[in-house]
Amino acid sequence: MKGYSIVWKQYSKDSDLGKHLEVSEDFSLPYFIDGDDKLMFEESNLNELTEIHLLRGILVGYFDEPPMIDTEIFKSVVKTILIDLKEHFKIESIEKLILNMAAFLRKENGDKISFKALLTGTEICPESSQIKFDCCTDLYNQLVRNDFTDKEWGKKKLNVLLNRIDKTKINPAFLDYFEKFKNYAAMKDKQVYLLEEFESEIKSFEEHLFGITLYYDTTPKLLRWSQKSSYNNITRRIQRALSDAKNLLNEVQKGSKPPTHLQKFNWPTRWRPMEDRIELLLKAYKITFFDRPMTRLSKSEIKKLRNTVMKII
Image (tube, rainbow, N blue to C red):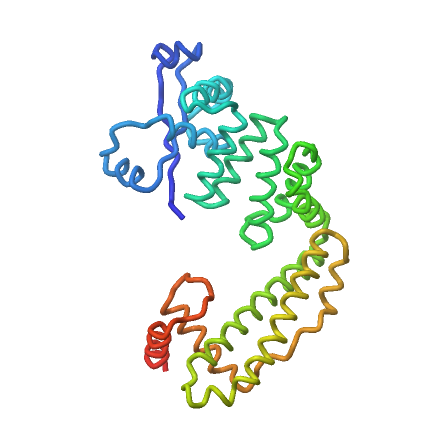
């Protein structure tokens, strides 16, 4: 994801913008720059900071406290600025403006940044259940992948936001997610640990299943026929177990079953005799195809994979 910087630009109270905002003191506004704009700014080649830089800066930098800058004036006029930006971008409401920009930031910069924008949105539009729900979604996703700095604060904040959502104002298709978030926020640390361990085990078995497929596909054709029955049996067993595991996980996340049920799940036996080769093939796959999803290989790709294996060993 793109790195970014927040640049605070100073304005005089007597500037055109200062007069428009009717401020009584000089003030500063935050601008968000990333990608090529960030490089150009660092090389002093960025000619101007635009409305899109300002909108992103407001949403991402709202809670920042930069040294030597008084942000109180900025916060006192932020609603007026957003009304102006709403008109500039021809968006029907400030709520839509925030939701649209947060979706863009999530795609370009990741959910840590879109979460910041939506958290600002909950402050500026406290009546919006949709902003709060999207904020909860970003926060939940960070929490469950252990990518949130203060997990205790995050769970408390998740609970607070959920309690302030009017469920009649969000898409009915997302109500299951609402219950999932609510149940997660209520979980104790040990229960969360069980949840995370089970999700990790699901991921491990998905990789093991794919590794078995790599093993089978890279086996010479003359030998493959003798392994076909074993391959089909073990893959069917693991696929069935993964389907059952994901259904159970979903029920626990929604609160239909307690997390202790996860400890009782009966995982199938791994294909131990070939585990070393499977691990080697998975390692070679990641080296050869980087972040590509676990998808079956073509003949030419199998050849590439074999070449990587030879280099590793």
